[in-house]
Amino acid sequence: MNKNLTEKSHIQLVSSYKKIRKIIYDLQNGALLNYISEKTLDVCGKKLGVMQNKTLVLDDMDQIGVVIDYCLYDYREEGLNAIDRYIDDSHLEPDSEKYRVVKAMLESFYTLVQVENVLPGVGVRVNDVMGTKHFLLADLGLSKTAEKGLVVATRLLPFEDFVTTSGAALPVDMETLEEIFDYAYKHYGTEDGEYIEVDLPQRADLTAAIIRTCLKANASDYIEYEDVEYQPITPIHRETHIGRNEHCPCGSGKKYKRCCGR
Image 1 (cartoon, rainbow, N blue to C red):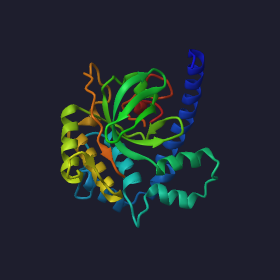
Image 2: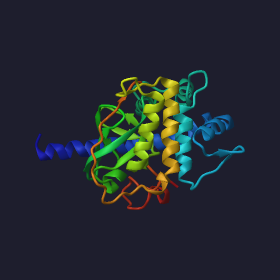
Image 3: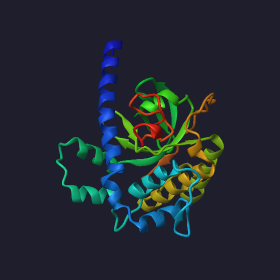
């Protein structure tokens, strides 16, 4: 593929990403919030270790996005999460862009990814260290701030040509990563110690454990990493977004929480 064609495909990808990003933002900060009850917040807050006496206790307000993300995607009543209930109620046209986004939300998964290389103005190529796949992660913020070797805990929404995040990504240092792996193998590892096997409820529990560990390490304080020493990580097998401190994808140069994320 020649350079011009590559640049053209990147322009098309970024255009698609921006439309998708807006729909995700509007849904997660609008209609989907109607499916989060006080009970949901209480149960999820306790699982994430941030609920005390029915009050969310957060180190900073940026963490609320992580809590809401878990409530929307991982809390289930009678087998349905907020996305399932929304799509049942909304009667979206199957060929609409919003349906495409909601479908990706239903197919999303929480994982750990390591940056393999940065594509300026587009995103990053990543290795899913909890699976066996490599992805093009479209994210204008990460394309400006990420360094090779950075590990991020995040929820990925799959689309045809790329994945994007739900918006609540947490950087993971090597010490935290080892703690997460130790927990995962101890609770969900196979007898041979090679794989992690989880069903749907266990997946939600493992996600909660990853988030708890990251929050305990104050991951929400550190979105921009510099001089990261690249340490390739051997993937483990999985059966089974903008961060508010990232640069805003609109290109203003401001942090997302000071711009479109207000």
